Image 1 (tube, rainbow, N blue to C red):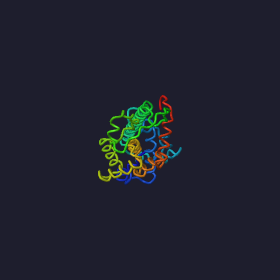
Image 2 (image 1 turned 90 degrees about the horizontal axis):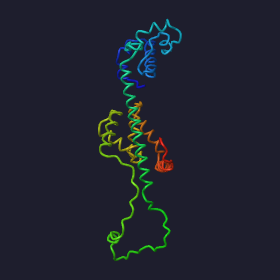
Image 3 (image 1 turned 90 degrees about the vertical axis):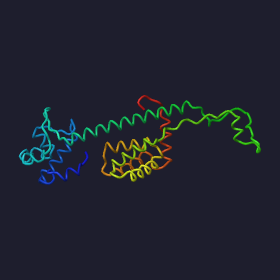
Image 4 (image 1 turned 135 degrees about the vertical axis):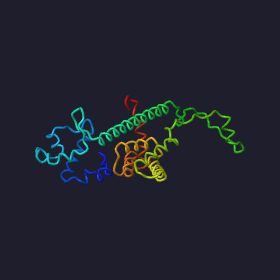
Length: 253
């Protein structure tokens, strides 16, 4: 759950409550964030006392009840809802759905790329014919020589790289996450792209996850996520890509 410190520590919940009331309010915020529906609480005093960490002491709970439930509104389904928590919970849920769609799209692009590699002819395999290699005399231009010969098979297609629109989107998300200007956000994206081995899809997925989770230190979180997913060096990344290539095309993968 995000802390919402800019609102929490400037509002009456912090400035006018006692220690016990503020502690109970924070416990109820945390409980509401994890309830179903998110951002809501039951109206039963015994359940509220338990969620606020008062156990079965209903008398102590009722002494702090008014301030601890500040901001919660009774709704027609019989539960208490906090407008700020409910709105942020919906926003976080939408972010998770977008991140999941992005991961599904990346998996589909990876599948198509692997299919293209499987269909491409192998130009690096061993040839079994005994035809001697054709020598090019020193007086003949190698370019004209190659133009007269059949064009060699092109290597398999590589995964799609990042376009200008993708980079601009990542810069905008970085600025939203870190609160930095466009120039600083662009510098961060450049550093992260280098860590990701110029894999825009990988960095884009990490940024989407960061937007959904809203970590306290987004810069350190993104770096740690990239280090974990890439193994920290090119050798580990090549090993990971080789492992992906070894996975058969199964349904759902």
